Image (cartoon, rainbow, N blue to C red; front, side, top):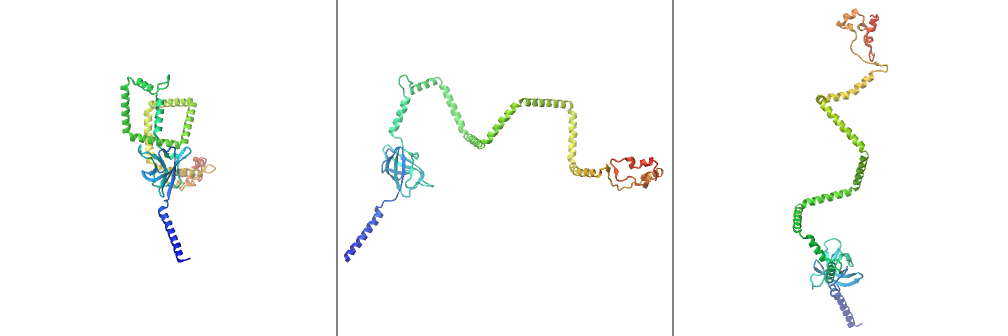
Length: 365
């Protein structure tokens, strides 16, 4: 290959590369976000119509295609445009003669966004009513309210005449009623805060009853059962009430006849209670030690009914000057012997314990 041919090939490669680079930079279509919306009707929307968010132009309608009972509108927006995932689509008609456009609302502020190829369902699309639809609806309304066929009711006219006959002569009463309603409205408006608080309390009570419905049902069933039981025992209850009434009458007579004595008894009872309160420490000590003392006393009595008592005093009467002369004249065992023996029977036999039997029977020293 000659040098000229090589230069031509190199120049062709450079031109081709430059052309491809220029197409990529200048002529390459920008990436877009395509979403679709399904409408029941889209009068005035065509390919090329504007797509806006908050009234700002952000995209263009590409196609408008029938899809069964709905119309699918495909829109293209610049790549990176964020549309709220729960956005609604509205066909807007700002003026009678201006072009309609598609409005996407609400604007995306945070959260998930629609992805490329997403479809807004017909439940979230809205189309304005057309003049033909409005006139047709008005025609149906006037036909329904207008006079009917011969022999039928006169429709709206008959209603107006009936209302006039009903209100005839009652103008002042109607005026007073309207004035009263206006006054009541003013009172309600002044007490809006209180009414709101009452409604809040009622709402809270309702939620509480719903939350504890099982408990309420149980209480209701219990009350119903108690009512049935009371009805079944009505005679017994009446007799009990009669006895209680008679008891109160007897108590009344008792108070009338012995009121002074009862007053004195109550005074003495008050003094006794006051003394017990003043001596509560000694009473507490007595109650603490009395069980032990009674237990010890029970243990002192043997099985043969004898009481074991240990005496640390002298039982010889001859040791005392007052009884020494008696001991010289009467030879008692208490004067020379052990005297009271230990243990002694319980209850003790005093003549035997004091030695009187031996003295009476001729006993001596």
